[in-house]
Length: 350
Image 1 (cartoon, rainbow, N blue to C red):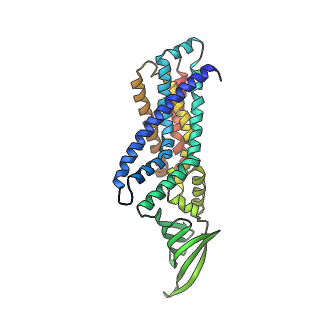
Image 2: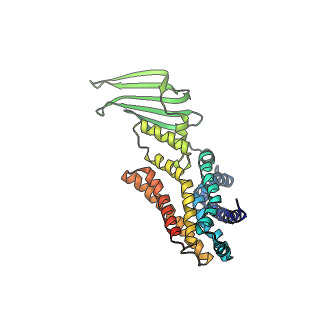
Image 3: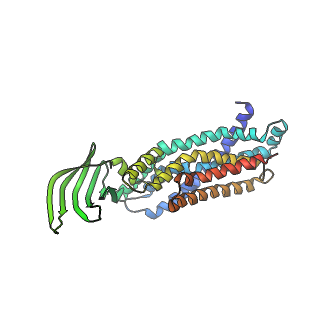
């Protein structure tokens, strides 16, 4: 790496980090104020503070693309304000080469997105939810419904550590007629299924009679594992790409709607691409519409572009769920549009 490339990359990295820390501090402050409404005798101020700190990786992950966009505008704006970009252009460096220098830190931030999404955000978010539920005396997952073929399962509460409470099974025939109802007081996971205590099964005969059968224990062989139940207790936003992929595959195997988890999976995959797209867009417009404006206007433009991307991502994502088109395109379209806008702006630079 040349000294000039290192200088541009260092300037841009410092600007992105500064913007990222400022946005993160503001986001955490607002989150902490929001937690004040949940304070009780058992959920105190220190619990709220821990809740916010454990959610910080998720906030950091969400802010990286916007911070990259605004940070590149600020970093290149500083170089432009010092006439350093003018000197680079006079020395024969093309805008494309200068934009390429900004991708050196962009690749680092894009990789950080994947690392956070896969290994940092899921455990921290899960721990945050578990701590809050424990402090408020709640269960992490309550009233969970699951379908397996023609059988519907209701779980009153998941107590954690592979223990269920209040399990009810409703078995239907292909014509929709209720065939049998089963229940268990409690269950715990054992290898390939659940061992249920106080099992009771009621079969409905064609003549209207009911045959009741009871067992002290009963084994339920199912692909529903404690890991999947733990994922169901956590919002898709806080799950890793690998978890989302496996859970979506499980839902599809049961004939259930997996679109929300598929959409979130593609959004996780596209987040690094979105970061690079934001950097390309910011760097390219610095040589065009924002070349000779003030730093304040660049910041305003960066914030509006970042918000536009976020709202576009939400719009296309929800549209893919409502109108049932590909969740991949629901997640990818904003990044594709930002990339095309950046390329068009860069090609128009003279």
